[in-house]
Image (cartoon, rainbow, N blue to C red; front, side, top):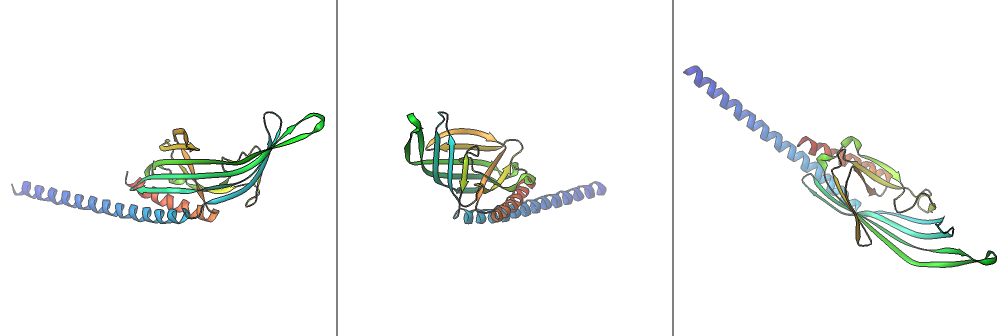
Amino acid sequence: MNSAMGNFVWLRRALFVFLITAQVSRTNLYSQMSSEGGALLEFIASEQQHGSVLTYSQSYIDDEHERVSYTGTLYTGIQLFKLDGCKVMARIAVEDRFSGATEHKGGFGRVRTEPTGYLTDDTVYEYRFSLGELNAEGIHDLRAVPAQLNINTSVRCEEDRSCNLSWLRLMAPHGEIAETRTVNGIQDKDSKVTSIVLPMMSPEIAGQAAKLFSGAVRACSAGN
């Protein structure tokens, strides 16, 4: 009887210790996630005040074999960034302001130039994902031309001759990132993707962002 009672008391103590240990682990994990998330939010809030700009000129031959030329300014930046625990909602805005002309060939070698007037293209990307679904090892900074500037045309920029901007790439191996794209007020894309890029002001800022995102992803992954 005493032996059975002793075993029962031992089991109760062991269970108590296990529950306390689990609670402490959850508390430490929550504290780590809060710390990583707070640092990430603070960093992104600062980045939202900047954004990136390219002043460009481009030309190409269209389908009617006529030369088209444009000059413009492309703005891109993080418009909104929300973090609820490990769930993220990010909105990226790309504003293109440009004007140009089309050269129409006439008889006897004459060329008539038709101005396009002042044009605008506004693109908004919205992403929803969980940090725990991202691959921490797949987070990295890069330099690349914005999708709005056709790299198959002759394009040059004042800020960077090759028209590269700084970006942060995030990857979800199982395609857990929900993406919508709206162009000039009309949504033309709603799908799940495996990777996205967020615009950053400079290579140095993109590098810092990669470290903060990686830390937040690891904290969230530990809680899964």
